[in-house]
Amino acid sequence: MLRIFSRWRHIRRLDLFAVDDWIMMTVVPILYTGLAVISTSTTTRDGSSVFAPKNVGAYTQDDSNKWIEESTAIAVAEQCMHNLMSALKLCMLLTFARTLKETAATKWAKGAAVYIIVGWLAVEVTFFTVCSTVEEFAIAHAIFNLSSDAFIVAIAISLTTSLSLPVTQKTRLVMLFGMGSFIVISALLAKFHDFTGAHSITRIPWYTREASFAVCVANALEIWCLFRRNMSFVHDTAQSHRSQES
Image 1 (cartoon, helix red, strand yellow):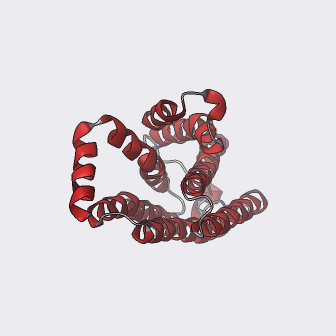
Image 2 (spheres, helix red, strand yellow):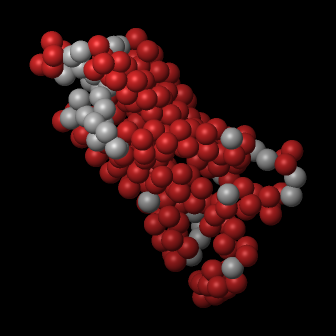
């Protein structure tokens, strides 16, 4: 909401909202809500998205019906998570491209966007063509998710350090985008639970944590601009540092 308010204060017209603004207003809330609802409901019981081989023979019809229900919920959560993270990454790159248009940095943002789209497609193909959603799928998802996270964080920090800004402002922006490292840590922990507890749902709460960090980081730049425009302390501090540097 703060991001949308920031954009509204800046352009004052809905028809001038960019693609990433509309994605953030429509797609992201739906996917995040779906993930949060499923995460809340599944953490109260021990669900699974695959049969544990040693328990297959002991499954009754009721167990099978319960498994179908729970595995369907897990599959939906996987889809919400994958599509949510891809949408947030594209929003960040579109924000970078809009902010840094007609600069050499634009090509890096475009390259990262292509990589994310290819990764999204590869993971979707793996998800719908491989039976196990926590083995081969987890490997493909980990490769593209973690590498694209690291790619975007590296782009954000390198672009920030190359800007002609006072050291204090550069440091703040680096810290702001450095929050993306928490996304990588959450993703690593989620994948750790994928590979060490394939027949458990302990990874789903970590999906929610990773998604929450990602939402914050994806909107951080616009929220920072809102604070600078409307909070005198932030604006005056930035102005004073700029005067000292000059």
